[in-house]
Length: 126
Image (tube, rainbow, N blue to C red):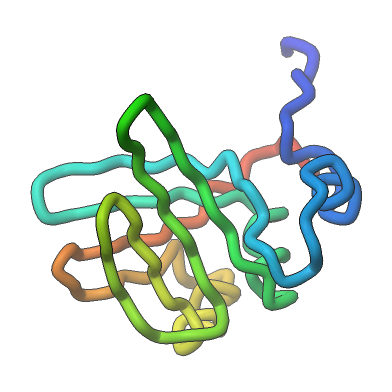
């Protein structure tokens, strides 16, 4: 079996915040996997990202380019699904217990767009 490769999110949250110079209320930049298809957004989070959401931390992933970009936030403090000018915020407040339930693979928020948040737990943190 190949040796485990270190990933950005193997760093504890408090060290990420210090490295990113963010306060405790700012979103955590997350390397979550995101897939866009017509009318649908699918985000896959790992165990550390789920733990951060459970602690009440907002996860954010973004890509920027000259003149634009997009951002996705997973927000455990609201149930609102809202988009604005290249930014989408998916509220998970009412979905956290289901997302934390080992019997469920994820949750779906009906949009538009339809947003699915799936758990993608691998052996990387086991």
